[in-house]
Length: 182
Image (cartoon, rainbow, N blue to C red; front, side, top):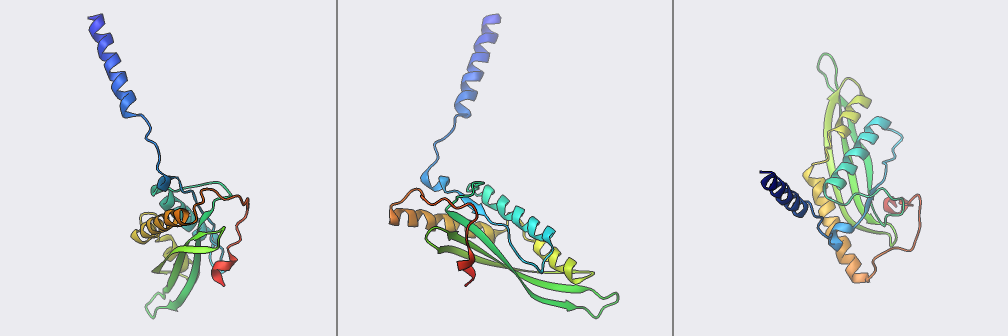
């Protein structure tokens, strides 16, 4: 009986070892992408932090997350307030419409590989809360974010193959992305 238990334990350990073995990553899966914190003085910092965290989560869900400061590929966000209106209802409510632009960029060669825009509307008691609510409604599993990341990843691989370069030699702690908004 002891031999049977020992044999079964050995078989279970062997099978679990085979099932948990790590697969080798392909080149497409090893592209590190860093998300930059959005900057906008008109918008509450908490809403921008939530947007940053949701975009980071989207990147991680698609297997491209990076925490290094010298990532070649970045996702940069830009938040624009399109409109703020007050409703005529009682009590009055504020309605805000915001547009969030996402850019998947190669920061070394200054190339935008993919771009996506998401427009959201929200209502709340005041302007700032309505804008924050609209920004917070952008979720990590948004199909447009997934499309941006997948298209950016595909173009990054094509770009790498075209220039025949695997790693960047440039060390940059704080990326300069001002060229995107010019």
